[in-house]
Image (cartoon, rainbow, N blue to C red; front, top):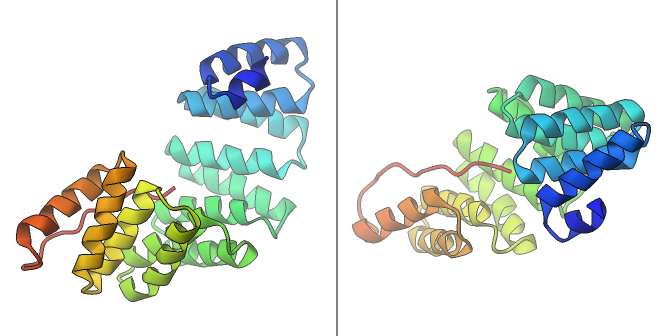
Length: 224
């Protein structure tokens, strides 16, 4: 029942059933792991971290437990712990692209941009279809002032996963900062249409207001 609710997007119900299953069978990996994911989707980050920690203890060889633990720790602002979880996942499987992407996020937030860029590059090398790593690589390059270098990575991210608002906003930033204002406006518009991108709405309104003239601050979007 818990798994069924999870697949159906009812994370609160999934959490209740999975928590009951964990109480009955605390030694089983999968219920603790899935409970951690359900709690994450529900927005209960600290409870999710506890469940994923438990899952990782039950199966210390699980890459996915460490990767998702790192993701939740990043979301919770616990970046050093996220870095440790991602580093452990990479040690378990050096070819895992998701682990390198999570590691890069923790490094970037910790101000270690060059190391983050290297980690994102490795994530893309391991899996050229990892749109999140491509987006994060482009975002980090923008932050380093390497706007033209960011463009192809962000273009590939939106090609693979069209309709992700912050992907389009980040590509819009790269276009704008390389002088491609009309293309930037189009990407900001796509980001707004995708929903949930306040930064893109402000960027679009600003470009439309100045009609291609003048220089103002481009608002960043968070990376995923």
